[in-house]
Image (cartoon, rainbow, N blue to C red):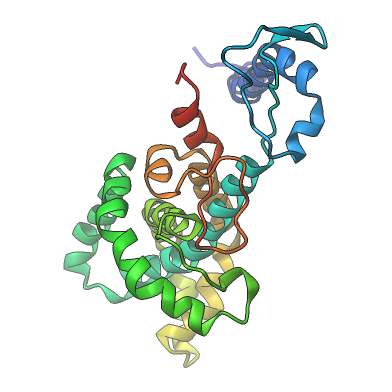
Length: 280
């Protein structure tokens, strides 16, 4: 039996509407359950750094209709700063590396090795985050703290955000590097597929006009990848923003503190939930 076009259109539309409806439902659920905290703190908690659960031995007091411990105050600006800045630095490092790796896999690797090499890159995306965190703690932080960060501070010290002191190695830059390594495979795998989907005729036309392979890639292929790159960058940014265990192990977990350079300790929303809230 043939399905009428209208029935098919409305059925597909209903299925597609499930995703935005789930997002709306999630926002409503979170707002409803967080309303007590919002009414107690007010929206100014977004711009404050004083996170204090109050005196554990004091008598609870009533504030704005809520019974809380005396001295309780909650500001999360330092969490927003650590989450956003570490993710943006990771994305700024990962996009050129991931795009370069995708071009290399598509153009420079011999055809017989292209598929195995691509599978290896995709397997990197499945490594648990705690493994990245452990590697960062044991290998990355000592190496960066003793060899790389002092050189960065000396060479780039004229830029305030890169000036010393370099501290122990646990901090914003280390967290960003670990996040970068976690999202590079995601960018590489998706951009390799986008490059492979470039029409063969466009490449052959460029070569026929005398362009080199590099010029074909730079002037014909890469301009067509703008939208896929934006999409995969957004996906990678979401992965970085929500990462928990790896960041928890290398970020330094600063409480109520905003670093003045890339070497200082930070804390992110997801890592803070795991480290500070008992229910996590």
